[in-house]
Image (tube, helix red, strand yellow):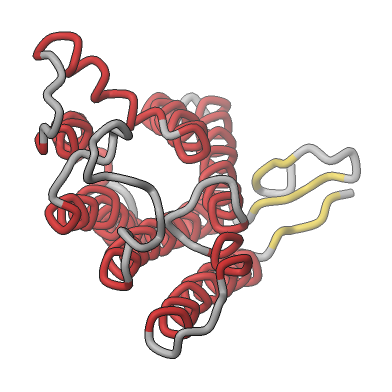
Amino acid sequence: MSIQLETKAISIAVFCTAILLIFSHFILILSTYTFGYNTEPVFDAINLDSEQNISTFFSSVILLLSTILLYIISYSSYQEKSKSSKYWLVLAFIFSFLTVDESTKIHEQVVKIYWYFFGQGLDNRLDNYVWIAVYGVIFLAISFLYWRFVTSLPRKICILIFLSAGLYVFGAAGMEFFGALYVDQSWFRGDIASFNTDYAVYDAKYFTISGIEESLEMLGIATFIYALLSYIDIRWQGLYISLGGTPSVGGS
């Protein structure tokens, strides 16, 4: 016996949680910087730009959910001897990395490789853009390799995947770029005299930019989850959990 997981219910839960966290972030910015309320304890817990808080946990969870769905699709496609299984598997590997990166900030370590080859300046503004450039090139390479595969998917799924990728990349790279321009100094280096991590430096404008960045990432992943669940519905008539707790497609 198995229970079908409803695409609509899961998607609504993910989107509603994301919107609640996004709304809370901007309300706290307004309360703190416009009305002068001391919201620091709550802001630390909700702040979309912070690490190891509720928002980061949620982002990691939805990335993990995306990864699990990709593995399920890959395995189910492999069982049907479909050539598409390898594409889904590589995506699963990529999202496994993104899940770990979300909580550990591996991308911020890319700058250390840059320092190794080009050295460290006391105030090298290029530090802020190194990982954006590296990840940008990787994204373009993946887009080129996956273009034919994605466009071969059902039209609804194709559109949703393009939309989710656009939201996520514009948030992760585009808004990160604007945030770096606003700060206009290396935030990888804590020994610069003019730099500190106090909230006085990170003002309302900075938290607005970073909030938009993280919001777009969340909504991009939420859209991707909806795309994957919809694909499972179209191809296998749904995702099921057996009484033993093993997920499967098509009620098998």
